[in-house]
Length: 141
Image 1: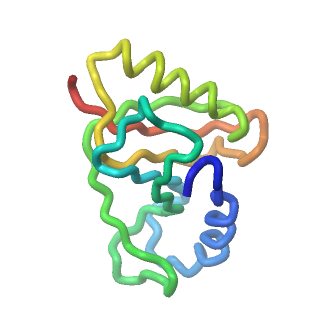
Image 2: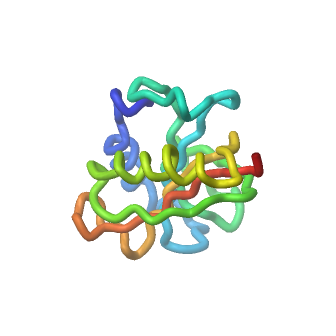
């Protein structure tokens, strides 16, 4: 998908319907993951930039993957973690702060691994008091 052709709500609706079929969750956290092309440069990010998006939960093992879902083994590594407060419509300000202020001023650059949002207890979907963690893969410049 892309930001201009955003299908996030459709993805999460279909995921949440099947979520109860995942028998071996490790916790109640939800992950919204984005995977970009390996040579992607965030300086050229536009609303038309295409990426893969996954709705996920952490599981003990892959012994019980419901039909229509896929297993994904997370790469891990070094991440910068930011808190986004507010609804998704306010994310542009957080995005700008991360990619146009913090990253350029830091000793890090964006790595090519998975980006994800961790939707925990404070996440309230479109509510103005909602909070989520933004995890950005980084490496030393």
